[in-house]
Every structure is written in C-alpha cells, then in structure tokens.
Length: 191
Image (cartoon, rainbow, N blue to C red; front, side, top):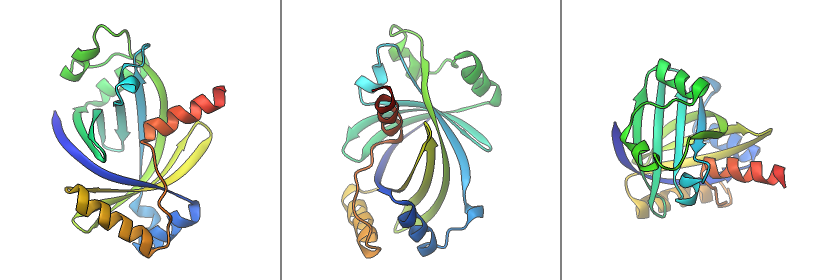
C-alpha cells in the first residue's frame, strides 16, 4: 500500500493545442504508453456521493487499485495497492476484489459494479519541479485531450501551470476528473 497527497492542475485542450504542447516539449509517439482505468461504485453511489474515485488502473507492466479522496481544491489523498495479474483478472472477470482496508468502509453498501472505463494514451515530462502529463483519452465513443501538472506546492504549481498555458496562448479550461467526465458523458447519452 502506498498513500500520498496528490497536488494537480488540469486543463482540457483542443487537438491542435495538444499537438502544440507535444511539439513544444518534444514529445514523440514512442514517449506514450496506454493505460486503462476501470471505475467502480456501489448501487447507492457511495464514492460519487462522497466525491471520491475508486479505480483499477491497468498499465503495461503494473496494475493499481486506487482510492482518491478530496482534501482541498487541487489536493487529493490517494491510496494505492499494487495488484498481481491474477487479482486484476478476478476484478475484471468476476468483480472479486482483494481484501484491502479501503474496501472496509463500504462493506455494508452493496456489491461494487464497474460504471465505465477510459483508455488513456499518456506521455510525461519533468517540468519546473513537477511532472506534466499529456493525456489523450478515449471513452464512450468520444475522446478528449488534457494536460495535467503534478507538483508539491499548490501556490507555485498554479502559477507555473497558468504561466505555461499563457505562454502558449492556450485558454484556461476547467477539467473535471476523468471519472467525472466519463460519468457526465454517460448521463448525457442516457438523457
């Protein structure tokens, strides 16, 4: 188990702005890897109602089960467990989760179900005492582009991120968490 505070800033991008950032930071196709997030909740929407996210992230050589809990604006407490391929398959095929403490809080909320998945092609680059992530995400017959900046300080991080966007003439656009975008898109489709 690994627990950390995650400080991040996000901005949605157009496809052209995404390409501009990749060119600016000399990111090439080989710098990208694919990860798939599977999001889970209870029948009563325990995680959604508490503004949390619970996901299984499958990457080329690693599987992570993560609970994200908001602390303040731009700050999330993140608890992550590394999973074996067998544990990952049990979740994806049978909705059978390993015994991890973060699931104790929902044991009376009903069975977890998968509420959707999102595939993201991601590249990253160290920048100004933090890390920039360049994400092209595919979900529910749509796609979006975003840049994320993770750092250790909210005030300085906000300035660095806004200065970067301003220097490239990219407008600041609010970006929900990936799970919220997935859920909102699915609700839009259902009417």
